[in-house]
Structure formats: C-alpha cells, structure tokens
Image (cartoon, rainbow, N blue to C red):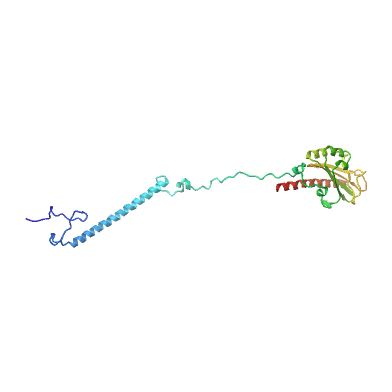
Length: 294
C-alpha cells in the first residue's frame, strides 16, 4: 500500500492561506529540503499583491480625504456648492459695500456772538471805567479830511447844572447820574459834546424824546478855548444809544448867529455826533469781547 500525507490528499500551497503547506523538494518529506525556487516565486507574488493593495488603499484614502474637504466646504457655505463668491462669506466677515451709510454725528453750532449793545444798555452790565478822557481820547480827532483839535473836558454828577432851557428838567425827570463834556475846535468854530449817563436804556431813550429845540447842554470853554454860544444862536443835536443820551452845540467864536446857510457849522456838529455814537458803541464792543474770552 502506498503512504500519502496524513489527513487526506496533499493540497496545493497558497501563501495567503494560513493552513496551506509549503511544497518540499523531491515531492516528499525525506530530506525536508525546501524548494527555494518555489519559495522565491511565492515571495515575489506576495510582494506584488501587497504593492497593489497599498496603491489601491492610498487612492481610497485620497478619495476619502477629498470627500471630507468637499463636505467641509459645503458645510461652511451652507449650500450644495463650494463657491468662492464673496456673497457667501458669513455675516460676521461681510465686506461693506461702497454705498454703506457714513456714520452720522449730532449737529453742533457755535453760540451766537454777544451783542455789544447789551453791555451798554444797563448799569449792571456796563461796568468798564468811564470818564470824558476815556470816551474821547487823544488830543485831536480826524473825520474824513477834517481835523478837530481837542479842548477841555468836564465830568459832573449834577446833570442839570450844566444844561439850559428845558433840558435840566428832562435830565432830572429821568434820573441822569453823570454828564460828561468835551469841546473840539476847528477854525473859528467850536463844538461841545455832552453825554448824559442813565441807569437804563429806557431812561436815555425817554430823555432824548422829551428834549426839544430849547433844551441844550452848556458850551465848555477854557484852557485856550474862548467862550462861544453864550448869547448867539447855535446849532444843536440830540440822540441816544444804549443808556447814554448825547447832545451837541456848535457855533462861532466871534458871536455870530448860526443860520441854515452855515453848512460848516452843521458839518462840525454832525461829525462830533457820529464820533460820539461810535465811541459809545466801541465801549460796548470792548466789553462784549472781554466777556466772550472769559
């Protein structure tokens, strides 16, 4: 009888099956010498199959990674497309368009300028030092091409004592507190300006309105200035600004009466009335400027 491998007929060796047996040389078990050629061929076959497996596995891994990235992009965009359109950027990273509304700010405005007249309208605000020489500074003044030489000045608290005609009564009735006077000379003509000071603008305005043609301030002379307008007719003016009423009287030093034809005398009186108004206004401007800078 013949002897075969125990356990049944001999099976062919498969290197990928753990239970398969390797072929031995000479077809038996006698010398237990391995068939080296067969082993080498089997090893080569096994290596090739492993390389194919690794290559295939790498391709599958690459596909899996690409799928994961695509899914992540789709999830980030919130739709079914992985788009690079800026409109798909999340709201937190959105870019403002060129038509975006500029930031607005509350409107601001500078305070209105202070009114100079407010500072000469009442005694409570008109607190700057006051004197005839401060109101009429220097030794002369120029109005256009005319130059007037400054004469004497005077300051009295008894307003009625330096007024004539109906003016004393008007000054007393409206509580005049001071009366400043100054005289200017041009050629043979003299002009005296009288500035009556009241506590309020209303008092000064009332005094101006109550003064008639027979009310006048006494002319001021001395210190080289001859008397004028003592007996002759002279030209007078009356006005007011703020808490000040101001008067002028102009005439000839030679004693002649002033008539409507004496335009030079009218011009002298008008120039000094304008200058007085400007000086009172400048007083208000100076105090308003000082208050604004405090």
